[in-house]
Image (cartoon, protein in one colour):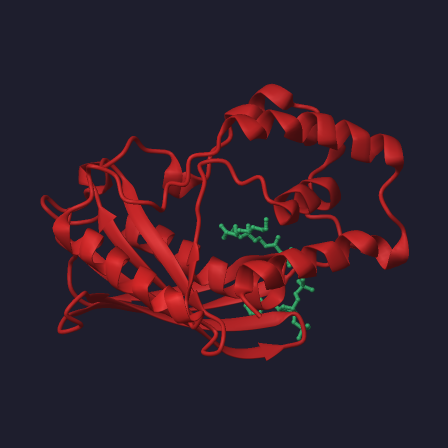
Length: 241
Ligand SMILES: CCCCCCCCCC(=O)SCCNC(=O)CCNC(=O)[C@H](O)C(C)(C)COP(=O)(O)OP(=O)(O)OC[C@H]1O[C@@H](n2cnc3c(N)ncnc32)[C@H](O)[C@@H]1OP(=O)(O)O
């Protein structure tokens, strides 16, 4: 089964029987639907090529889109404002009513990695291989992500690792959050170069998902960083706050 399909099915399954079989009250759901309808304004898939992409990023995009043709890999679209069913469910179940009512704040909310203008921050595209439980992300880190002069900030590297590992964990386990992320920074990453982040599920134990990642140059000769992370599947019966 393709992962996007798997995510949708999992979300539907959760929506059918959240909180031990009891749906959130209808009034609450209607209010949430009204609130979430504002998200429809933002639709641009930011994982598609734009004029800021360099030739390496375009090349990797084309190569992997070809690999998608036989169904072994799937391109994962990505939006500035996540509005999938799974996000809607997250907001309904895990976001405090007080926060959900703050429409202005929520309408301004953007996915951190998609909050920069084209080319200035994270330009990236992800592909998932369901059989290998593996996600690859090709990322070109722009000039606003500078740490040491000419190189990426370590926090921006952690961010794109966390985003790729999160997608891997969400596809495998549904609604999760990072509880631990360990990174070894081995070589600095030049600004505006393209790297490949490779994440895979190592182990699932109950609610825990163990993910490992590495960050390499696209010719795979340079290992920039490696990381392990732990995700916990959220319990709909426990409050987040
Ligand atoms: C729309 C879909 C969702 C999109 C998500 C995108 C995610 C993007 C990535 C992120 O940015 S996530 C944001 C950063 N992470 C957080 O803010 C998480 C903060 N942590 C928490 O809120 C809670 O830890 C959490 C709700 C995730 C879990 O709390 P619980 O009370 O449900 O779990 P609990 O504390 O019982 O732990 C469950 C198990 O995990 C273990 N555990 C928890 N934290 C651990 C840790 N840090 N290291 C090792 N083990 C840990 C814990 O010992 C236990 O093991 P056992 O089941 O064996 O007893």
